[in-house]
Image 1 (cartoon, chains in turn red, yellow):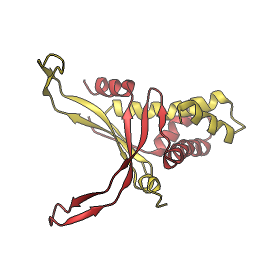
Image 2 (spheres, chains in turn purple, blue; image 1 turned 90 degrees about the horizontal axis):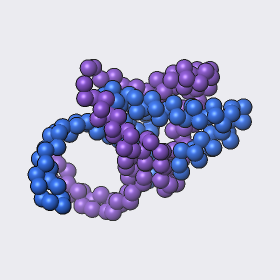
Image 3 (cartoon, chains in turn green, orange; image 1 turned 30 degrees about the vertical axis):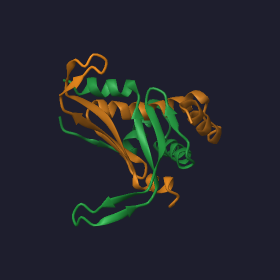
Image 4 (cartoon, helix red, strand yellow; image 1 turned 180 degrees about the horizontal axis):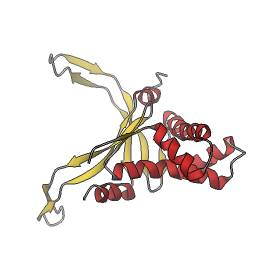
Length: 100
Length: 94
């Protein structure tokens, strides 16, 4: 099975097919979905999409890292990272879908 | 924010669409991503992030209650990597 990569275009195409809006408007709406999720996360909110998964923002404290090539110590400043926790439904479908 | 709030926000911005339409649009986006991953495909959304499937090898696990060894089969799990733009936004750089 060759792995393909879907992009915004494929998501817009799906919306176009399923909902019957114009291609242009479908693309704008897909962008709007991503934009609203990003905005909520940027403001520190957790985004919980039932039967899909949960995006949450975590604070990481500062630590001393190391350049793996040179071995030099480099300070890593505190930062916020995003974690995605897939729903059970998504996990089950991914596990089942690839077992063929 | 939960799914219904996301739908509401988009509905508010698009008064020419019915609530039901917006629900179908939002659901289609998430459903399409799950379907792609179930097929083993990747979904790359520049600036936002990429969903992909990772393989986990079979391993010998342990029942934490009884300490008994149990076989855990190899499996595929969904994975998300945050895009650069979103990562920068989380850290107030954009």
